[in-house]
Length: 155
Image (cartoon, rainbow, N blue to C red; front, side):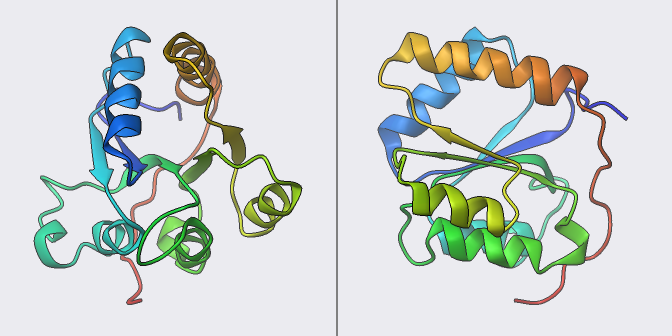
């Protein structure tokens, strides 16, 4: 099944400027999917668990694709990624690491923990739009996948 424009994307990012730039890039790339934001690692786990303010799955549906920064407060991106992959209900969710790090150890650890892609944040808005457009073509248009539908295990 191909990703539908009605499915949610989750951006896990603590920098408000990067959130703004990503929203703008998604709009310029004409990606109509709803984008939800988790501003730290613990909030991402809470969102994915459906606890607290995220218990309403109509307002906060499970995402089909997650953009995950590594340098996050409370739980870093590696901890979030490890938590995601430890939950059978989320094993098919596409996690794209989108971070400023290009260190080999970060790349290796991200893939070892189950990231589907590792991308370094581009230095300009135009390059970010180009990156998002390429993601649109691959992940949103051509990629076949299954959507998570089972219950989330407690953290």
